[in-house]
Image 1 (cartoon, rainbow, N blue to C red):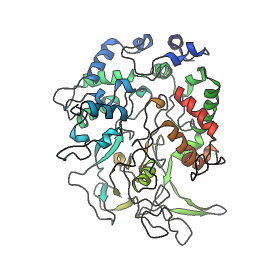
Image 2 (cartoon, rainbow, N blue to C red; image 1 turned 135 degrees about the vertical axis):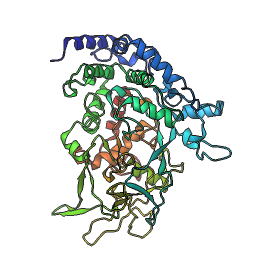
Image 3 (cartoon, one colour; image 1 turned 45 degrees about the horizontal axis):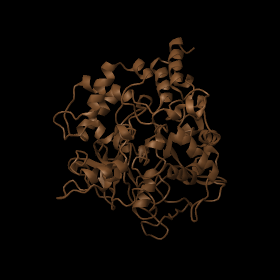
Image 4 (tube, rainbow, N blue to C red; image 1 turned 180 degrees about the horizontal axis):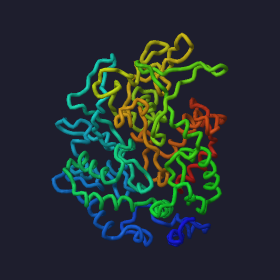
Length: 487
C-alpha cells in the first residue's frame, strides 16, 4: 500500500494541475515550461531552501580558479537547462568573448583565430581516457593511440531536468553513478577547475534533483523518495487531460515508444521482449565483422552476445552520423561538421596483448569501394558487416565502450526520458537530428520497422520520394508529435 503521506503529496501535485481530468485552461498546459527560478509549493516540501537556494547559486556562478564557466553557461536555465544552437549563435553574434567560447570547445583549440561551428550546433568537446584494454587504430589496423591515451568526441548538452528519475549520468554514456561525481567531473573537464568540497557538490546535486519538466515527474520522484517501488507507481500521463489528437498520439506512443521509453520515469525499457532485444548485441570476429548463423527458413542471423546495461544501447545513431559524414545522409543536422574518425582495437585486458576485435571493421563491399553501402557476402551467403549491419569505415563516437572497454557497448548510449523533449532540440547524443519531427520520421523509417517486438512493420508508403516505407502513417506521426509536445 502506498503510504498516506504520499497521497497527500499527490494531492499537492494535483493542486498544481496536470494530473486531473480537467479542462485545458485548468490543466498543466498553463504551467510555465522552463525551469522555475523559485521552487513551487510542492518543491519546497521536497527540497529545503537551505539545499535548493545555495545549490542554485552554485549552479549559476563560476567556481574559483576555473575558466569562468558555470554549470548554467551550458545548461541554460531559460532553455530547459539544455544548450540550444539558437542560443549559442545569438550569443556569439552579440558577445564572442563570452566564457562559453573557450578554446577547449573551438573547432580547432590550437587555431590562431578560433572558430566555433561545432558549438554553434550545440556540441561541446568531450575528452575521455581510453580504457586500459583499448587502442586507437588506423584504416590499416596499425595502433596509433595518442601518448596520453585520450580521445575526444562531440556531444550535445543534455538537460538536467528530471535527473531525479534517471541515471547513470554524464553525456548519455553513464560515466558517473551519482550527481555529485557528475558535477565534479563537469567542473573539472568543462570549467577546467579543481576539486570542489563535497558539501558544495551535494548542494549542486540537490538543485539538479529538484529541477523538473513539470509536476508529473515531480510526483513520480516523490514516490520514489518515499520508497515506493517503481513497478507500483502509476504513470501520471494516465491522469493527464488530452485533446483528441494528443489522445491518439498517446496510443501511438504506447505501442511505438513506451516499450523502450517506459515506466513512470519514461526512461526505462518496460517490455520484457524489448528488454531481451536490448540486452543483446552482435558478436564480432577479431576482424570486427559479425558472426552469423544460418537459420533454416530465415537465412543468416547475427549471433547475439549479452550486455549488462540494456537501458544503454546501440540503435545505430552513430551509424547514421557516419553516413552523414560520407555524404550519404546529408540532411543530418551535424552532416556539415567535421567529426572525428576512429577505429578501435579491443583486448582481453590491460596488457593489450590478446586482441578481441577491431571496431568498426574494414569495410568489405560489393564494389570494393569502402563507402559502398552494399556489403560483400561470405561463402555462406552472410553479409560481411560490422555491428550496425552495413559497411562502416569509421565511428565518430563509440559511446559507452569508451567507459567499459566492452565491444558489446560499441556506439551505445543511454535511453533518455522523453518528458520535455519538445523543448530540447536538437536530438541524440551528437545533435544529429534537428527537429522532433525528424526524430519521429527516423524512427518510423529506420528503427521501429526493424524492432521485431514492436510488431509495427513498414506497411505505410514513404512520406517523401526516395524514402523507405514507414511503420507509422503521416496521421499517426502527427498525433504522436502532438502528444510528445505535451509530454
